[in-house]
Length: 54
Image (cartoon, rainbow, N blue to C red; front, top):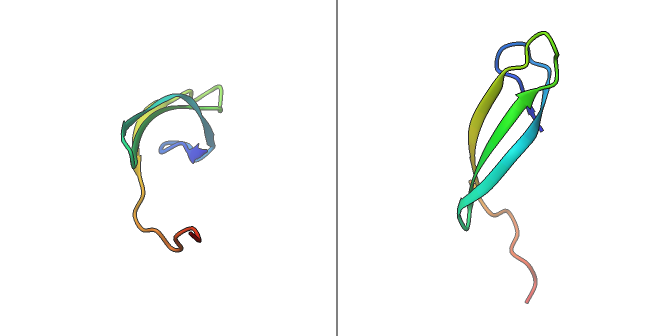
């Protein structure tokens, strides 16, 4: 979940796709009916804090 950049209400994912193994493109829509802003984000892994045990 992201927040709307205009009204700060919650926005839900409408669709998404992986651009690469660690980067995702997602389209969001604001849940505030008066706003209904639709926006796109690029989400990626910034840092791995703990690797899985092998």
